Length: 260
Figure (tube, rainbow, N blue to C red):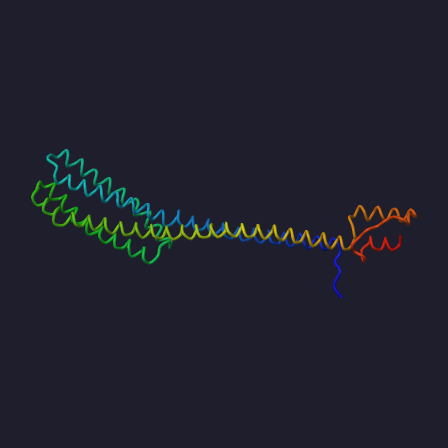
C-alpha cells in the first residue's frame, strides 16, 4: 500500500529538493572560488614575485654592462667616477632583489627547476663579478688597452651569458604563470556552465514539483479549495440540490456530490 503524504510533507519535500540543489550549488561555488583565490594568491605571491625580482636582475645587469663599457671608454676621471658610481648603485639594486629572492626560496616556495635556474644565475654572477673587478682595477690604473681587451674578450661575453640565464628564469616563471592562469580560466568557465545548468535544473525541478503537487491537491480536493469550502458550507446548511462537477470521483468534491 503506497504511503500517503500529507500536504505539508509534499510541500516540504518539493521545496526541500530545490533548497538541496541550491545548497549544492553554493558548496560547489565556494570550492571553485577557493581554488581560484588560492591559485591567484600563489601567482601573485610566488611566481609573479619571482619574475619581478628576475626582471630587476635583468635591468641591473643590462645597465651595468652599459656603464662598464662607458667606464672603459671614459676620457677623464670625472666621467669614470660617474660610471663607477652607477655600477655600484646597480649592484646594490641587484643585491636587494637577490636577498628577497633568496628569502622566497628559503621559505620553500621553489621547484627543483627554479632552484637549478637560480643556481645557474648565481654561478655566472660570481664569475662575472670577478672579471668585472679586474677590469675596473685595470681602468683605475689607467691601462686602457688592457681594460678594453678584457672587456672584449671576457666581460662582454660574461654579461651576455648572465642576461641569457636570467631570461631563462623569467621565461620559466612566465610559463608557470600561464599554466596557473589557464587553470583559473578553465575552472571559471566550467563554473559558469555549471551555474547555468544548475539554474536550468532548479527551474525545471520547480516546475515539475509545482505541477505534481497541484495535480495531487486537485485529485484530493476535486476542485479549487475555495470551491470545496463553499460546497461543504452549502451542504452543512442543508442545500442538497447544489450542482457539483468534478473529474475526480474519489476526491472531497466527489464525496460532497454523492452526499448531495
